[in-house]
Amino acid sequence: MNQTPEPILLVRDVVKKFGGLRALDGCSLDVRPHTITGLIGPNGAGKSTLFNTIMGLFTPDSGTITFNGGQIEGKPAYRLVPLGLVKTFQIPRELRNLTVLENLLIAAKDVPGERLSRLLLEFATGRRREREIQARAEELLAFVGLAGLRDEYAKNLSGGQKKLLELTRALMSDPLLILLDEPVAGVNPTLAVKILGLLQELRDQGKTIFLIEHDMDVVMNRCDWIVVLHQGRRLAEGAPSEVKRDAQVVDAYLGG
Image (cartoon, rainbow, N blue to C red; front, top):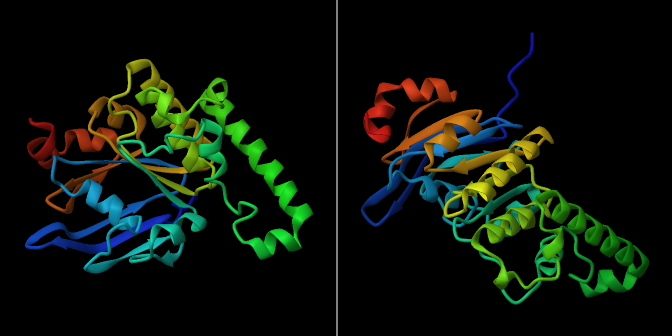
């Protein structure tokens, strides 16, 4: 009998207040490894606040967040990325005046030259690591279909291509869990299908995807599991077919 794997992410009773507003009001949920989990809910439900709190951009007022077996609530993002947790943004934050390739190279783990003492002591190792990083960047550019734009300045990319660059840059840190905030919002239908196909390939390669999305067709057809947030709390969760039939979800979000 196969046992259900332990969650890679556990959120327990998380509260986040902004003045008198409780954006997260005792929020609890799990994300299982090697899945695409969708987070849905009406505007103001707390979805982006939850992602920012998981990623250390906000500090929760109470509650716990556990990632890959260790508690992470309150830790800053720069400490979470080396642990295997990354986030992309709804509006891409590319480094505009660097090329596509340069955007990837600076996002890699253990970049040689970050510490001068280490660079001087391990020059040969550093050069080898540089070649590995370059090869990985080229591999990922081919994977997402941006190889032909490797030397283009990021500011010249289309909106959809910037979304691809944002995803690719996240992959350079070799994450276990990727938080995606509306990965296909504002993207033309052809490129949206490509991005969603890449996410499924990444899941099949062992990555875990946790995404916010408003397009119900995307959520229902591409996610393995769905969590519904309402007024800062989990309202429902389940497989897409179950969530679609949940009367509370229909009333609160899907509009009958």
